Structures are given as structure tokens and as C-alpha cells.
Length: 222
Image 1 (cartoon, rainbow, N blue to C red):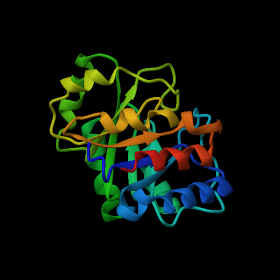
Image 2 (image 1 turned 60 degrees about the vertical axis):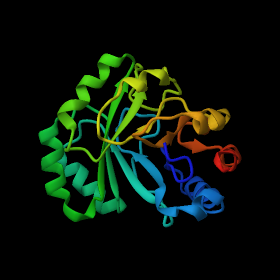
Image 3 (image 1 turned 180 degrees about the vertical axis):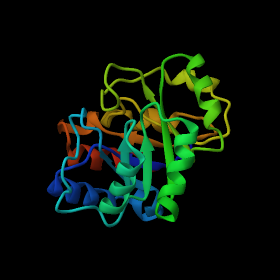
């Protein structure tokens, strides 16, 4: 992992005031001043999620990239959300096939800078499923296996990641919380380029604890 300039994604946002406050905390961090382009904010468009964005917030971030999270969504729906929310990145968290991603990339065109494909990981054998997506997805996201898709606050055994030998860079997700800064700084994998933050930084689903996030970002800085 590039510990000086990691990608940091804060996911599960929807409240306009909270979006503004989180963006402010990010923008005031020394990590942001080092490399602003590596900060992302995620919006979940899966109706079964407790963080589902069912209407466009009155404020959307201007200083960080916007990520739309989808689960087995119709491609035209994804395209519409890209336009409506000005999404820079698409994250796919369902059973989307490689051909789906190829078609979606063509449909969305240059508006989308990257596509992330998420995988739930519990054992080394789970990395086999990533092989078909090599050269198709720009990044992978490795999350914990749980009953619900994403935002469970559940960690998985990071030592399993040593078995990932693929070429596609990945983001680390799954229950990362305010007390994990030192553990993240000591984690090493040549293809790990960032982290995904969600439920462990919340006071309730979809509402982030800005002070906890601010302290966490400060602790990630050398």
C-alpha cells in the first residue's frame, strides 16, 4: 500500500449537511493537501441498503470524486445515475459479469474514469473469482463475507490477502474503524492502493461521525 498517498473512500453518504461536513474534514487534512485526487465519496444506489440514496441530496461534494455503488442494477439505471449525480467512478457490488462491465463502460463513455468490482472474501479460494475480471475492472475491492452486501462493520482476516497474486490493484474494505489507523499503516501488499470506510465511522446508517474521521485521517499521516 502507498501509505503516503492512499486512496481513501468514505462510503454510504446521503445527508447533505453530513456530506458537506465530511468533505470539509477531508479537505482540511494533511493527506488531502498531499494528494487531493485520491479521496472518494460513495453513494449507495441499492434499495435494500440502510444507506440507500433514494433522492438526490441538495449538496454533493465538489472537492472529492463521487462513486456510485450498485448491486446487479440495470445498465441504463447506472448510466442515468452517472449523469444525475455526476459520478466519476462506478462500484459494482453484485454478481455483475465481465461482459456486463465491458458493456457498461461503453454505455457510460468517457464520463466514468474507473470501474471498481467488489468481492467478498473469507478464504484464499475466494480470489479465484477475480481472474475473469483481470483487464476488465480498473480496481477490485475486497470486503468481508456477511449476510448483507457492504456496510456490515465486519472484518476479515487480512493475512489472507497474501494469497492474492493478481495484477489488478485493490481497495481494502470490511469493518475498518477509527482505531485501525496504525494497523493500516503497517499493512503491506504491493497491489493494495487504498481503503474503504463506512459503518464503523457512523453514528447511524448514512451519518458519519466527522470528529472520528478527522482524527483517523490525522493518525494516517506520518
